[in-house]
Length: 146
Picture 1: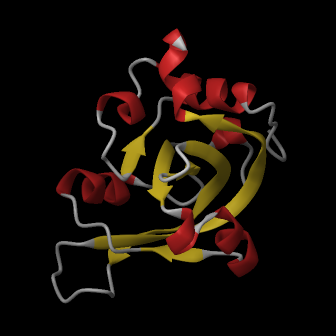
Picture 2: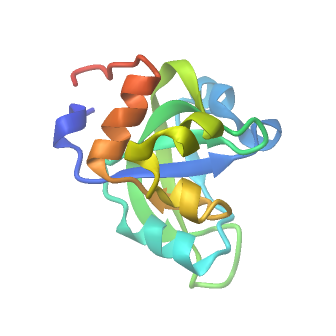
Picture 3: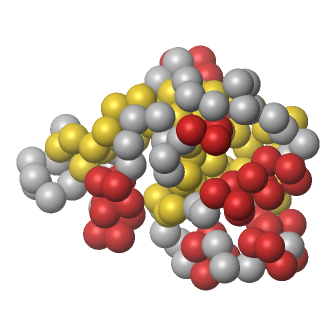
């Protein structure tokens, strides 16, 4: 895995932990991120590159719990015959030492412009590098090699 500073892009992906949570990703070692049916989220999947880092957000718990990396760039989503939809593969990088609650994100002026705050229902979103670093600081987490 490239160090955080070498990653080309930063993202946030959302999942319901009851459906597929951080612990599932760690247990599986990697997963196909599929089933996205929102055009903007799909476009974000298309923009992901191998080695990009993604914050892993548990929607029902409203907290960021881990960091994954893109292990395979966008390809046709095999869960549908509609060629417009895409999937990527993600692999776990690190569990956050302290989860970062949505309330903490919303109350931090450095994170006020995040899509997580502005477009709360979007399931795959870009995160600016400084905001990504700020979230890692709030989580008291250093990435391996970073």
